[in-house]
Amino acid sequence: MTDPIPLGMVGGGEGAFIGALHRIAARMDGHFLLTAGALSSDAARAEASARALGLDRSYADFREMAQAESARPDGIKAVSIVTPNHVHAAAAVAFLGAGIHVICDKPLAASAHQAQQIADAARRNTARFFLTHNYCANPLVREARALVAEGALGEIRLVQAEYLQGWLSDPVQSKQADWRTDPAQAGAGALGDIGTHAWQLAQFVTGMTPDSLSAEVSRMVPGRMIDDDARVALRYGNGARGGIWVSQVAVGQENGLSLRVFGTKGALDWRQEQSERMIFTPKDQPPRILTRAQDRSGSFRTPPGHPEGYLEAFANLYSDIAAVIRGDMTHADRIPGLQDGLSGMGFIAAALRSSDEDGAWVTL
Image (cartoon, rainbow, N blue to C red):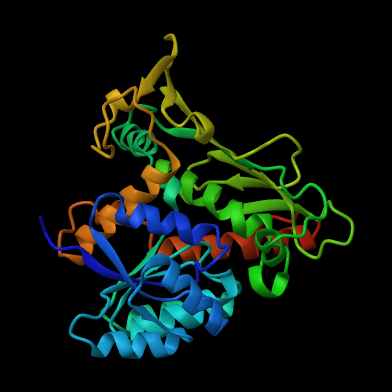
């Protein structure tokens, strides 16, 4: 077996949510080995977190880490950035400049200026930038993309994506809620945290990007300084219409990401909470329930009927990223990257602008 790629991590220390998921995903298929980290902006916490994970090398500052690791013959070749959004740009710029590949959690950044900093650094350097929109690596989402590409749905007419949660329906104080509801750290609220997932998923499956949108963005919880609900209408260049509804105040909803696509010859319906099945309905025929047994991408580890889901989709991305780092570009087109991140930031900006202008249509 090929030796695992030495991996670093920025953020993801004690009490972090997404960092732990990235670590599981990175090691699931044996392609990466976590060896170094700047796991917290607090030096003591960073050191304690590194010890708990058995890391040999802990850094108090990610810039120091980028320079030190790039100078070591056994230094990391890639880094996962799993911090709050406002740190993404500075960390990505530091590691790209040091020649270390960047695997960054979404959204791309907390502001358009920060996103441009990442874009400039990626263009100046040879190291690659990857963005972990993990849901697009679900086997049936990849099958949905293949069905659309081969014309099974005909010409696309309607696209509807939703991502509904209820965990922020009241004022919440926790490590995860605090930074996600802080404009300085998050940039955008529901639009950035989950809206970019819905936006990217719809683009990934259909291969289409809307030309314009009209949005109503709300702050439902009194006193909240950041959006927690957004309804967005979409217009596509081919005449298709679409919609995105994202909310973190939808009481009773846990992680309700879904995508429905309707064409002239058929329709698809996929829901993340039942990610092992997808409904494909050819025109004038009964619905067909597709499972991983019908997936042609090979993006799974266990036989159909042995459930896989969220973590495995993350691991699919890490495996594909490892292949690209090693020079295998076979599936490079299905890995989200800089352009996906910039597109997501454009979506956020356009939705906020439209809402500020009473739902005016905004060109993308």
